[in-house]
Amino acid sequence: MLIDSHCHLDYLEDPRHGMNIADVLQRAAEAGVRHMLTVAVDRDNIPKVLAHARVHPQVSASVGIHPGACADASPVDEDELLGLVAAPSVVAIGETGLDYHYGQDSAEIQRHSFGVHLRAASRAGLPVIVHTREAVDDTLRIMSDHADPRTGGVMHCFTESISMARAAIEMNFLISFSGIVTFRNADALRAVVREVPLERMLVETDAPYLAPVPFRGRSNEPAFVSRVAEAVAAIKGVSVEAVIEATGHNFFRLFSRAASPPLFPL
Image (tube, rainbow, N blue to C red; front, side):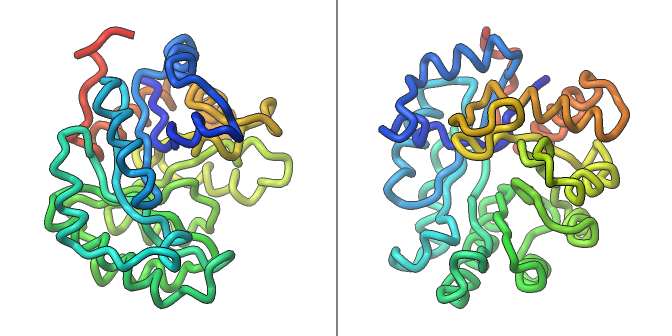
């Protein structure tokens, strides 16, 4: 089954994108998308993320503070995160992680926050959604120190090397690919796709960002995850159906709290 494993539905509603969520979900259903995970990035949007998941049975939620938001927020603690995951629609903690491309000045704050998220996820028995950019060594070190291999997580919108992917897989993390795999200058990432086994892979949009070819320049949305699945299939030389089946199975195995699609109609 086709799953968008990472999107930001509340961002689609803001004036920059101006989408109606009912229409977004209808287009996703028409594209065969059976489920999606909408992901929080800061305290302000957590209520919106939870509301979408509460109202729409094909939507699950994740709660956390993005590394890019750490410097502008009071420090998160484990108990705060554990209180948020009490909502039944919450299936993961994050997105969290490290982003040194834009946030080198807040690196120490990011590292502290990342560790808090990983420890809270272990206590909650939930997987973690990890964002990493230009911070390979620190990301893997903190994961090695604090990630729980029993619950694992996902390296979302992955753009790093195969060696990092393999290290994350060893810690029971999946590798999620976005529309970047369709970009003309993404040959290095396509080489990583070829090496990551299907059973360790997810697909995502990261909507409203990173719309895949042929939609570049437009706001991304969950319906477009089908283009990511098609691109992965072409890169790996397998059928689209094989990618959809494997990544759907992987999603519900990792995010075990998520409602199974047969429980609700499209």
